[in-house]
Length: 223
Image 1: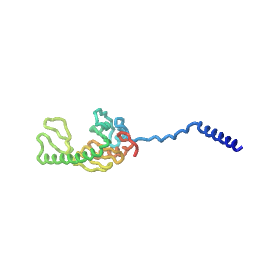
Image 2: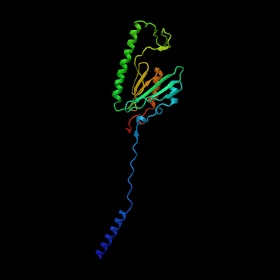
Image 3: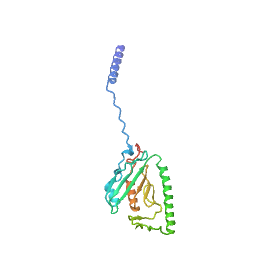
Image 4: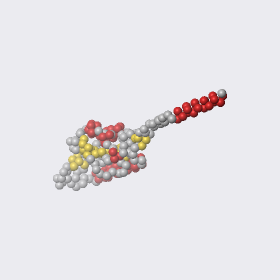
């Protein structure tokens, strides 16, 4: 009797185990998709950080983006170039470098721009002390005309570099450019335009909208 009960129990266990094994395999839980930060430089769009309307507000006149087919350094996007329809048409540009060595490059540019801005001011002062060049009157911010009645041009005195408040570190230099390291994205940005107040405003606009997510760099995991 005991042997019979044992065999019945063994058969029942075997049947149950086989039934469990024959069930559909359990599906593995899907791992969450890892999102990457950054946009490949060749696909970067300037309006992702500065729309035409925003630029018009900052620069004070309608803007038109100009295509720039020139070659660029590997790993960097094409510069963003705009024509501003002011009373005197202007060209404004900004460009980015978000490569792995950007900090080293930016530090070298800060030193270079500080040095050369000072040198230009010194040379200008020496030339001014020596008297006017025959045929050309040099006066900061005024229209000058050469004695051959050529086109009028504006001669401006060069300006010293100056530290400004934007991003993690910034320098306005040569009276026409502004360089800053962003405090969010691992990039430095260069602004070129003829007015210091608007250079700063444009830099602040770009710094506000440039993020780790939309920076023109090889995509990488979010930190």
